[in-house]
Image (cartoon, rainbow, N blue to C red; front, side, top):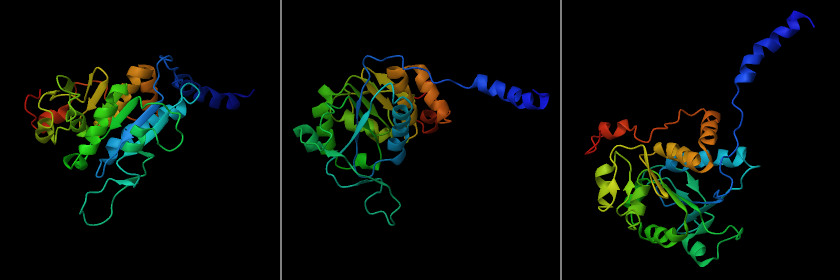
Length: 258
């Protein structure tokens, strides 16, 4: 073989050797399969689409190792909007639910009906959390005994805090909306300086973009840190791995922040 033909192979060798191979899932015995997303009008877009993209990639890249399903739940089957009521214009996105709260609780949800109980419930935040959340709060409170994990993003934690589930437990929330949010759960041990908090089976995260980091943290806990790292590298995302690194708490002058 001529040297001119060998040179390209040698040039490609370091990148080939340095490519990160897909690690196996560390835990294969207790993996959740049924995820649920709770939606309400005026939800924050990134609260939903950020974490979902993490789980989308997990389901796609590890399709031979695990099976995942997603139920999208809301009060009605009408498309749920990111838009604020009364806002001029129509710059909004809409998600079509797969089942209503009532259908899920009554066991009459549309096919597929053999998914079993929701194991991981994802609850985003957004301006809508300041509206009437009576039905959302009641739904979370009713299904919590059968849910294995809850992941909240931003002010989504206030929906859970108003159920009483978080009483006496640690949680965090959006730092920009801190003063309002913590009043919704006066018995919660709110952590002012935290990107996310894990307390038992509840993962709560700070504002908006923190939902991506808590999703990776959940993947790390359930599927293994190598899997979480691999997914983040594939997404070209500079992941925050320190739950205590939270510059936004001091920026927004949250009481007790460090």
